[in-house]
Image 1 (cartoon, helix red, strand yellow):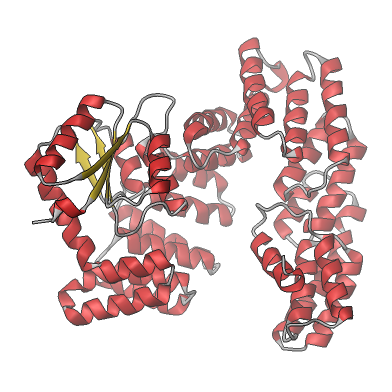
Image 2 (cartoon, one colour):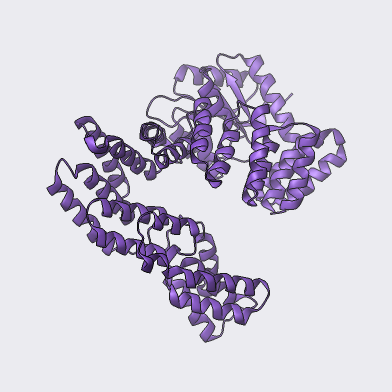
Length: 534
């Protein structure tokens, strides 16, 4: 039996009687260290100060408060909980939406109310036995060392081959983190050949997607969904593949099914809203974005893009008929929240004002005009690049509001910064047929591709010269600047020659306005540290 007197517990529930009841059960089991909290926010603060062996967390802590799923997300992302700790989701609710939502985030166990001391002890004992067996693996996970995870898995399997099934997913995740893609693919296919397993299907689909093998990834997800039609994550993966293949309407249909099964995921609702908006299904888009905004109030994944998407969907839904009073009020409240909660983000301030101007363009053109002026003034004074999606949205709004010249200026800037991305250029092409904008990036992109080929062939001098020529054509282009700096640093000594240092510094300074949400930002930071030590 578990030595309960050595373990620490945290009970999180909004009912004091339940907290007292569970504390009494634990006391009878010999537990000496029992803390309690009545809100998720309080639980997070306590976990930030102390490591708990067990957390028994109620799923629903009252309307307008963090729920257990959101607390578990925060604990994992902020690394406030060890892999050795045990998180048990407790609830009296049994709806499919709640159960699937809770299980998607993989707590160690799910416990239905009511329960007694014997049932609680039995469940905890089994969980601890499993964790103790996997202890070396879990400790390696806490250290963030995937190679050590593989070693620990090998040692456990050698100790007793019967434990091999317990290690499969840990081994797969470690291979993924080590970027051993070919080994991982072979490993996952071996698992699936032996027995259909949902997580292995999902992992193989994600791997194939990452490697650009969309047809093969789609085939994997199709097989998986036939075998496991109740797993929302498989629908998410399938939708992602379909979007990449240009089948956005089918992707929306697939994601609708995921939302039907498990509607309490903010990111899933946001993705559905984005897809529906692109498909001009404004009713579905407004419904999905509305859910994302509501569910995101206390979620780690709260995103102002959901507010902006909701406003856009509602405006588009109104069409030529215009907006009724109730819709205008919802748009105003939605955009006011963005402006209020993101005061330091000039890009969001610009977009919120333009969106509000769009909603008022017919009913109050004078106020709409003032909002556009405010937005353009902020746009001129911005110190940071807009993301490609945000910039395209701003350009489209300016065009609709009658400011063609300003919209064209934004599109030109987007082409200069992101012109190496064909998807971005397609977005620009949907908004303009100006050959000066559409053709400006082609020469720079060609030179950049030649530079990449030379770099891979270890022709560094040639690569550097090609990148310099490309950057001269598009001095704000993020990818080209990063490529030039990386090629200059390749094989360089710790102390850079003055000329190389200056060229690297200049290249990085050209793009230091890139948003930190850009997927290339971590690469930029690494290169900046190498060059400037900051």
